[in-house]
Image (tube, rainbow, N blue to C red):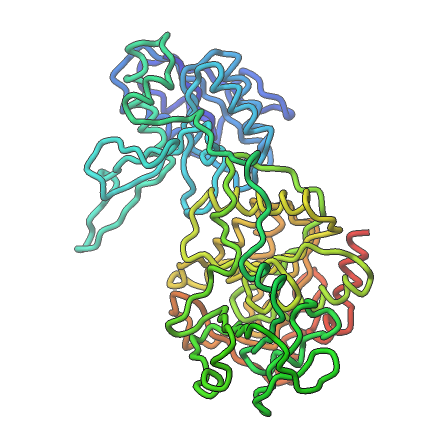
Length: 554
């Protein structure tokens, strides 16, 4: 059996087992058969894990060190390593590494390996987001499940989990789990080496299919059949005259009435407790449906007076409401399924925030107004119900994010939208936060942002920050964005700051409005300490951010 270990290199001094090891490494961007000392022991640890779980002594290992001078994992080096493994006619490729950006070239070379009867094992993401090539449907993804009793367990058509209980250490009555999907991948590689060596000339995928019900070539890509779907709320707007009730009530002040969706004819004035026309400001009850939108994070109840007064109208509530869930009217990510990524042609502008409640929707609406004034058609996506006012594509915020499905779904929707609509650019308001604020905020923090970063080639990011933002953390998050290939980042100072008493909220942080003195001082401080252009909300309002975006795109 021949195994290609694509990793950070194996130290010769650690090869104490009787096996044939050939060393390859990257030199001047070219993969050559030469040993190169590595300061990273990751590859050595994986090598030891493979060897210690193989009973078959007749093996050869190709140690392919893909680390270059930069020390970063480069997709081209992974591709070159897989090509070399195919040339050498290996049986198994072990990749206990991963990339967060999709690469069609990487997918294609994995497909070529599968066609040559080569099994590729790759480690799942440690952070439960996305990892390529593990999340390709032609690669076996390896996870750790410490709860399972089986030695090897099928998770789905292309995913295997194994327990790593020997990596659990008890110290002072406290349990520490040092397991990783990297070493799990290497361990499974050892298992498979023994299983597949019994009949080396057989179709390896038939063997794995019979034993574990794995179906790597079984594609669930229904892109040929799937169509761009109107959401329930869009169908409602197309066939009805609609009046809107907005919560918080002051949102109506920021709505540009010139660009409100044509079938939304009236808005509710909370002080006067009447509906008024968007067009002439006069009282108006010439509508069929009342659409109540709550963009706050507080669960609301429909006011009893409104229930009684308008009981003869159809009422649809979107957002957080007590005992009401009308998310069926919104787009759902799970409606769009694929196993391959499609190339998006239009430039993508993404609005992200360090936490929730940092004026992302205000910025999106302001930019949409400017685009429309200039006659540009923009594909607009949001998780905020307020986007419905401007005919934005509003998705229900997912309660659970399953990678890589969420990445393929986002990409599929955007691709179909580009094919079916004439647009000039994308403007995406990514719900939630871009990352965890602390170890307690684990639920979906940064996950949706990771999905969009992997699903679309974001050209420009607008980063919304709070006035008391920690500069070092901000720089870390900006570096995270740049790492995904974003060319330009603009920073906008929100007027809302984090409420420290909600730091341990699992489902999201609360914010509060700060006074102008603190706001201006924070703006000057951030502006002086980072290289990126920093804008106030007034700069956004008066078009300075928009002009900078247009200049960048031009």
